[in-house]
Every structure is written in structure tokens, then in C-alpha cells.
Image (cartoon, rainbow, N blue to C red; front, top):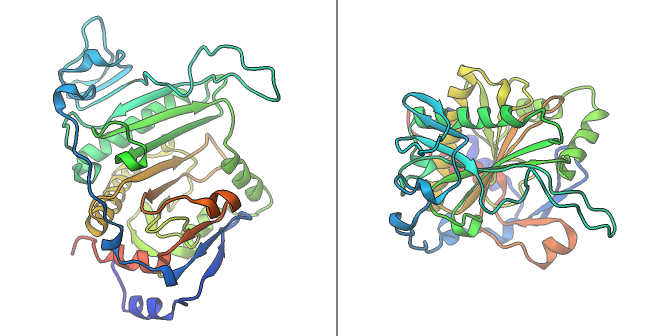
Length: 342
């Protein structure tokens, strides 16, 4: 893993304290790096809400009857499916979300303006049987199993009729949108390609090279590099919408998780664990979202982690331009300082 360099202090000292409007790597989108509003990591720390009792948690072992039947149960015996009696001994469970944003058989949409049926699928992936487990504490083996579950569920839906996009994301912490404290991931399929992905595809269509491959190659030599291994790179992106935002990019071109081999999965598990542990160590386990961006083809897989440290207020809502008080160069240096030694 890459560590901090002697350039770190010089890079930070050389950063202008005056506000700077930064353009996205290849989209016509902007953020404001307002370094004069800079805060210490401790200034972002917030009081934690007490966790709910395990007895009332529908994601805990023993409470399987509180959820729909699982469509995939990861066990020591392999991947199983709930029958008339639900499987009780498991490492991870996948089942339909009771409060689904998309459903397989939606009602007809309104005829006003333009509306499409909310046709799709919405699943919950319970990452661990342990109520107080945290993704930053997952072992290498457990993180690899989680990524295998992501691969499996993506492959299950990719290519189905009516599925144009498969969104996999984790909300960690109540402020980041997690309604239950027990660690879990969500998967939502959409009958449309999200506007952000469409904009990226449109920008890529006029390029003679992969735009994300270019980002990965150039940022490896920048002060925004946090860590890297044989398969992946972790950066604080030049265009960072929020403080301590990080991106994970594969160093070889791949469009989605299903294209990973065992080595890719092992290396991604390692670098994702490093990212989550550095964020927790530096910022005292903040709320965060991580989102996996992928398509069946003609795209470059990437994972974006955004700690929930600042509010989206009137300026951001009114302009679509985010104000970030922590320059990514500073964020990268501070995150590098929390990497394991050796």
C-alpha cells in the first residue's frame, strides 16, 4: 500500500487558501474547494445514536421470520435458498426489501406528464450475523465473501428484461440513511440508466481512450493517491464533492463486478477495508455512503465513498455545486497517515 511521501507537507502548504472552483475530470460539473473553511478531522465528529436491541432487530440471527424468505443465504455449506423453514445458520442473507423502491409488478403509472412504471427489484444484503459488526472490522475473508455476494446478485439481474441499471450501495449510520444499525447493503434495479451515468457515457463517446483508466493512471502519481495494490487504486478525487470523499478504481479495465476474478476480488477486499478503516480511524466512525457504479459493458467500474460530514443546503440545492471545506490533497495525506504500517 502506498504511504505518505515527503511531498505531503509541501503539497498542503502550497495549496491556496482562497476558494477554488474545480471542474469534474470530464463532465461539465463543478465543486468549490473552500480551504479557508478548513476544519480539523475532530471538528466533524458527532455523537452516536444508541444501537437498537438485538431482540428487536429483524436482521439478527433468530429473527429470520421478521423478514421475507431469503433468495440467497451464504453458509459454510455454500449458497442456499430459504425453504418452508428459514435457514438459521448463515454468514450473509439476501432477501427482498419490505419497503421496496422498485417492485417486479408495479401498478400502471400516472398519465400526467411522463411517468414510467416502478418496475424493478429491491433487495437487502445483510452483511454479517453479528448485530454490532462494522464493515471496517470485517476480516479479509468476510470482505471477499461480501464482494462475492455483490458479484452474484449483480449477475443475477444484469441482462434481465427491463433492467437497465443495477445500483448497489451501503448506507452506514442513521444520518447517511441507514434505518437499521445492523450492517447491510441494498441493491435496486432500474428500468432506466441514471442521468449521471448517461452523462458519463456521453462524455466517453467522444474520447479515444477510457476516461476512468486515464484518471487511475494520472492520479497514481498525484498527491491525491491514498493507497494502491496490484489490482486497485484508492484516491481522494480532484473533484471531491464532500470532505474526505474517496474513489476506488480498478487498474485494469473492467465494466462491472461480475468481471472480477479471484485475484481482483482479493485485492478489492483489501483496499476497501483499508479505505473504511482509515475513514473510521481519522473521523471516529462517521456516517457514510459507498456506491458501486457499473454497467454491463462500455464502462469502467468504480466505487465512491462519501462520508456524511456536511449538510446539503441552499447553495448546493440551488446550483448543483457542492462546497467542500477539505481539499482532497489534505484529505489524502490525512487518510494515508492512518494506513497500517509495513
